[in-house]
Amino acid sequence: MTEIAHAPANHPCPGQPPQLARDGGPTSGPLSPPNSSIVTDRHGAVAMIAALMAVPLLGFAGLAIDTALAYVTKERMQRALDSAALAAGKVMVNGDPETDARRYFDLNFAPGYLGTTLTGFEPVVDPLTDKVTVTAEATLPTNFMKLFGIDSLTLNGQTTVLRTNRTAELVLVMDNTGSMRSGGKITAMKQSAMDLIGIVYGEDQIRDNLWVSVVPYTATVNVGGHRTGWLQPGDRAIADPGAWGSTQWKGCVEARPIPYDQDDATPAAIPFTSFYFAADVDNDWPEIDERNEAQNNGTGPNLGCGPEITPLTDSRGVVEAAIQEMQPWHRGGTLGNLGLAWGWRTISPAWRSTWAGEVPDGHPVDYDDPLIEKIVVIMTDGQNQVYDWPHHEPTGAGPRGSDYTAYGRLHDFGYTDKTEARREVDRRFATTCSAMKAEGIELFTITFGSSPNSETQALYKGCASSPKHYFHSPSNAELAGAFRSIGQQLSSLRIVE
Image 1 (tube, rainbow, N blue to C red):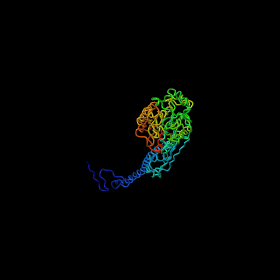
Image 2: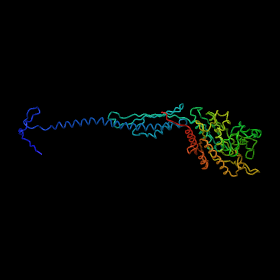
Image 3: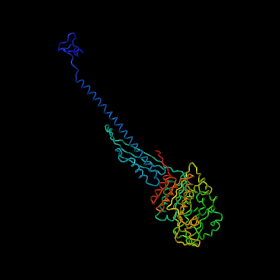
Image 4: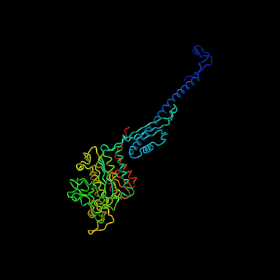
């Protein structure tokens, strides 16, 4: 490598041309090195440009972050609104939709979520259109948009839910036995049933494609004293009206022989026999006292006979009147299997011509009707049993063992032990449940109060269409909750906005 020596100042190297000054003239020495201040200026300019560009880049990045947070927050708020509107829709007819809406909103959009402040929340219930609309507004503080003077973002959301009823033939099979008198249970049951009717009817007196029947039961079922055409030829209610003393046949019937006490065979196939509690030491008449207030001390051939069946109707007023008519009727016991069987008969298509003229044309509909479901709700406050009122004595034929029921007295039923008789009734109850479910009937079951034992609870749970169709309600308040829950299951909710 050739080293180049520098010539002294003002003496150009031999053979080299003279250096030129920056103005083009010759210089007296070598060219000066580059000016370091110019290089520094260039680096400063680049840094300044980079700094100026960083501001919008940082702003765009901040905008993206704040926008993403706003999107996440709005999505969370919208889900909370959906939950709130659905919760309010469930109780819009018979409950506190405003309170439920706020509770469910707060559960899903906690106060202060991601620093938000809720500035507006309003649930609006419109019973005329069966809609619930819930709106909310919140502010979300920004993190980076503050650089541009934007301190917060406003988020708005709204959800509208439409409540529609399932189209159905609905039966309420209700315990009207004497034990319902204690603890305000009959009042609680009637109010609970009214709540359910309020839910399914809403503000209307008639709902499209909704028909309801009511079947009160005791130890027998009252089909109505005017239905003598359902009785066996020669039945005493027809052939010997005088046998009823100063009263007349109220309408209760005896159970038909097995298996017809468990099915939906019509009177044309197997007629019925009028219920007749004959005069005896435990039913001292012809002095007749059929007042409900007489309770266990009542007398007469209709002793223990409750209110009449109300067949399918689309009239809310008729249904509510039937519910209000229910009372606790003493003596005889509790035969829920017969109540259930009669509930089935009110919606069985086999009975269409039997009910003709008393129910809407074409009802009960076929089991496979694509539009109409068949639904039964049955409630008891105790166990199936035959009752033995203690104030009677054995007769020459031996101890009676029980009051008179739809199966007669205990020995007429073929038993000497009430526990074994109860278990037989339970078996027949279960058989009827299975037959109804096999036809596609949806069964809701309720055990009420402290009396239903573990066997009864298991019986009713097994009868229900699914675990969510069974309710054990030890208290009056829990009974009300059970009926409301059923009413809500009979309604469907969908988000429309």
